[in-house]
Image (cartoon, rainbow, N blue to C red):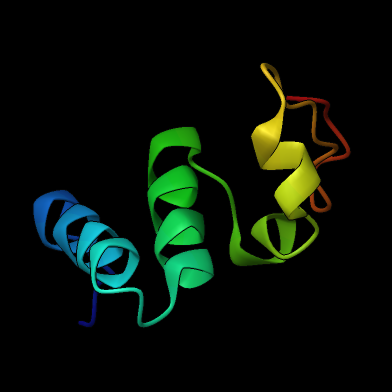
Amino acid sequence: MTTTHLDFDKAQAKGLRLIRTDKNPTAGLMIIVGINMGLRVSDLLTLTYGHLRRNTITINEGKTGKDR
């Protein structure tokens, strides 16, 4: 049986590394936001830089239709 498991620490480190090395800071930020907010990839892709610059983010989840 195959399981999907995300190693939080490794993913967080990868996101920070992408930001610090300036290789792909946008992807690094999306990784960190996605992990901490528990968002699906499809919901992450709807976010813009402007969303992330605000004090609060309200997102409508695509699968469930709930606001977060």
